Image 1 (tube, rainbow, N blue to C red):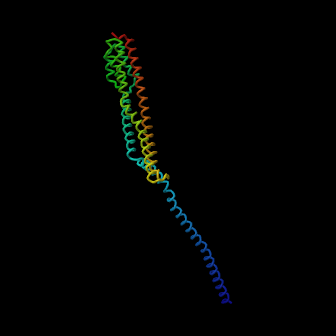
Image 2 (tube, rainbow, N blue to C red; image 1 turned 90 degrees about the horizontal axis):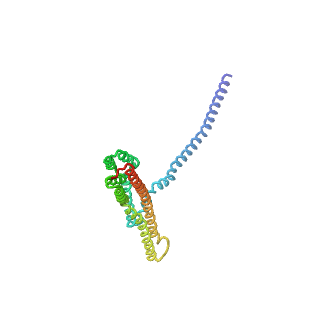
Image 3 (cartoon, rainbow, N blue to C red; image 1 turned 135 degrees about the vertical axis):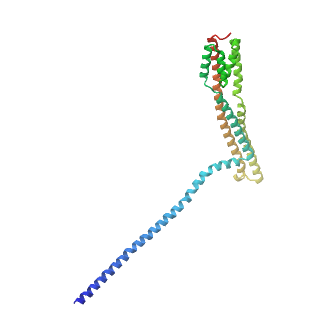
Length: 274
């Protein structure tokens, strides 16, 4: 009886062990499939990540190539004419910068200067007023100094001296402005000259090829349009600087006129004329 019970027990243990083994194998199979699917998904993601830079690269090339495109267009406009346009820009800017520096140094606090001169004249100190003018830069101080130099010769002489020297100072303020206007006129003229020559080149190409297709005339038309564009741009840039210079000259001229009238009023007020 015990033997039969032992055999039955061993059979039951073996049956349970076999069942657990089969269940374990069945459970492992889906896990393997999950791992395989995960590996496939990760491989797909990696391939997608690798493919992304290929789509971003053209955007970077376009951003970097803008400056190169401008240089290329400048060169394509025919070096002989584009170099002349560039020289006009450089020389025109040089004269503009020189005038701006000169006019900026010529500007002073006119109200403060005239107040100092009036304080000296109120005391009858003409030499002190002259010293103030000598130590102050700019055309306003120079005009006042010229008037004070002739204060002993009468009010009419002082007035004529101030007016005459004011004309000299106005001419000095406008010095080299004619060169700026020259380059403003030259830049678009050179561009238009390049346009005419480009058109002639286009017609020459048509004559040689015996065809009027766009490919034949593209080279000459490109030269014609690029030279005109750059010439107009140079003229616009120089015109802006020129107008700024004119505004500063106008401001200084107004200060000169006001100061000369104020000086004459001071001389009459304090009865300094002889």
